[in-house]
Image (tube, rainbow, N blue to C red):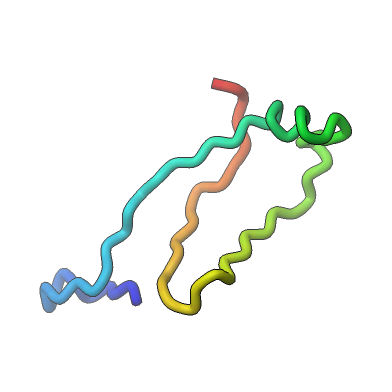
Length: 66
């Protein structure tokens, strides 16, 4: 559970751990030569390995290679 009132009660029950993940499209193209990032219509994130916990996802996007 992520509580927004932690600043009032000082009773934080969870803490966000920020991480950045980068997946170069060339790796997908190595696996499947027909892969084209311009054809992506939908991304699905399926978290079904555990019934407890919270996952916060923010700032998903595409960018040019680093």
